[in-house]
Length: 427
Ligand SMILES: CSC[C@H]1O[C@@H](n2cnc3c(O)ncnc32)[C@H](O)[C@@H]1O
Ligand SMILES: [Zn+2]
Image (cartoon, rainbow, N blue to C red; front, side, top):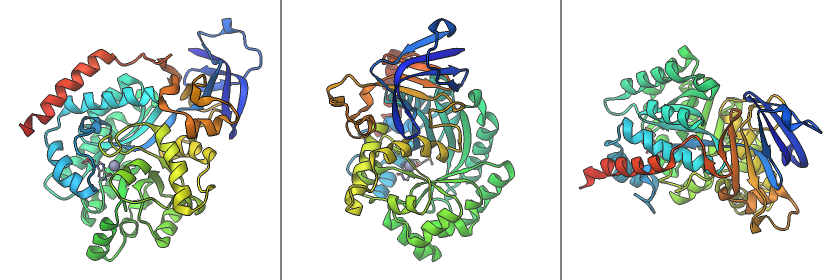
């Protein structure tokens, strides 16, 4: 299958090149010809007035938590988890997670997100929904070592790896998902690490999200969550650490030394009043930082345009520096840096040989006028509703805002049905 994108403005090598043509062959970008003949291609996409960007990468989420959107707002993390979310999550099943995930994929594709890094339960259902939707995803079974199901969860995560790693024509990778230092005691982290070493599986974990988490960890183990995980050998595996809001200079040194990647979730961190991560410090130390939404209960959107904009804004205030994170840096965090967080070195850029995850953003809206700088426009005034066409792994999954892989009407009916089922426990 070959596709020609014709006459678009293309984000390449950190700048916008107008009037470009892109040829996609199979799942890869092949070339940028000057005068292509449309008759030579199976499919032609007109790029007039479109900005062509790499698909946006959401490096930390819990996709099925769309079903908890607006269920528990205006709370801090532990109150929210312990008193609202965890009791409700006891009522999840495969059917519920499948449709909650599908709702997330519809929202993500519509907003230009082509890849996601997930940690949740019933991950086989999440994977099946992602496969049908055509999404690219890194999947982790969330693991807790407190309580009776630690070993069962780990066995499920390994099974997930055997069934889904590299599946979907290479769109899926599987990670191990130890939830956090406060839910995974040292002995359990050692088990997870040993499994990761045995099967060569990377790690996705929440770390140092709140000051309370760090304080409790210091009290219990005499170490920060980052130092504790390092001493337990977890960082001997490639690790993606979500949040890292409360990290000190020693933590940052360890993370750089162990090449720990960070998923920065600005909206979730603000909404749960967790704090603002020292992103400029981590980036200055050479740490790769991607952007994420976290789940739709703590955000409450899965909108990477919103995350880019917020990331570019809040660090200016945190650092009292308008250059803290500029528009280009925010865009790179949402694309190429996010792709690195997911373990790809051929994703998140529009180059010959890159995987063809591409979005076309319509620049005809009022919010795109005047057109001085399309990178700045994309980050500060663009929004997810401007996305017109989305390609993942060389396949068009949304054309002119029509979702091609998801039966939207059925999905809405099923989401209503499983929401009723999920919340029937509440009376
Ligand atoms: C065991 S599956 C993943 C687990 O994580 C919970 N979760 C969602 N958002 C956050 C967050 O910001 N910090 C910590 N844990 C979070 C989710 O509800 C699942 O229980
Ligand atoms: Zn999370």
